[in-house]
Amino acid sequence: MICVLEYGKNIGTLRNLFRDEQQAIVFAKHIIDLSEEEYTCIAANKWYCAKKKEYVEVQDL
Image (cartoon, rainbow, N blue to C red; front, side, top):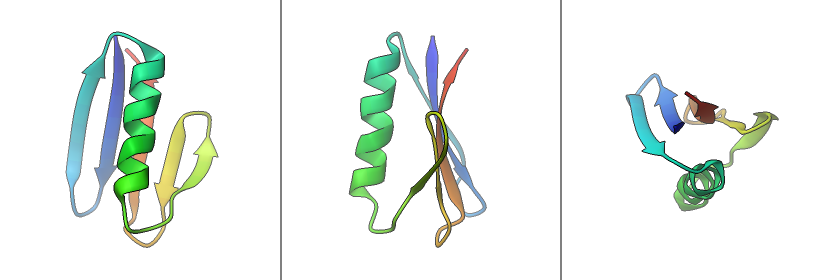
């Protein structure tokens, strides 16, 4: 299983599970694209939004 984590000071932790890593990456990028703020890639499959102080990360469970 692959997990997309969205976490930060104001949102707590949100988890979405996927069977396929590519689907999880597409979902994570969809979250980022819908955001009104800019996310920066800080590691493989991990993004950070400095303005919102939130992370989006794809993890292999």
